[in-house]
Amino acid sequence: MTKIGYARVSTREQNLARQIEQLKAAGVTKLFQEKLSGKNAARPQLQAMLDYLRDDDEVIVLSLDRLGRNSSDLTEIMEAIRHKGATLNVLNLPSFNSIEDTNLRNLITNIIIELYKYMAQEERETIKVRQRQGIEIAKRQGKYHGKVREYGPHSPNRQKRYIYKEACRLLTRREQGEELTKRQIARMLGIAPVTLYRIEKYRAEES
Image (tube, rainbow, N blue to C red; front, top):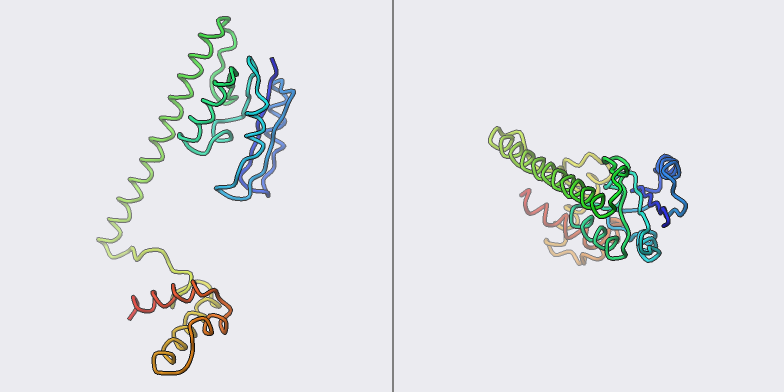
């Protein structure tokens, strides 16, 4: 049996040292680690770990959120671990290593993990409901006006406020008959055509 660790951070600026230290303290002899650059980034080291797994190996992670991003993700990864005949040990969850029967220990561990996933999902859903309720109350009180647009008259970025105003001015000149294409306007302002289309849409909503 090999104790295999997996460590992950969500940005390249974060440090893996704490996870690695605790995984090695737990007896990990084979370690897979990665720093991701975005929410939807691929996880080649996770896949490499799953490919490496053999029967009776033990996968060790610091916490479930290091292994998967959501309940669906976790379920898929856990099933892949089970399919390889390996077990999962999450260091911040209760340990049942004192139970000698391997099948019983794995069963109890899986129940705890499923309960944890359920609670985490419920917490996320509760937060979403409360956010929606808060927005509805703020709307009724006239305090909520939606997210401030990146390009608009009230943009917090002075340069983008200027680009919005210039785009509106050039679009008006185009509508008045001046020979200006939208691509030319976008090039003059140093923005992508899709950004100009978005500004045009905002301009129509503002008028």
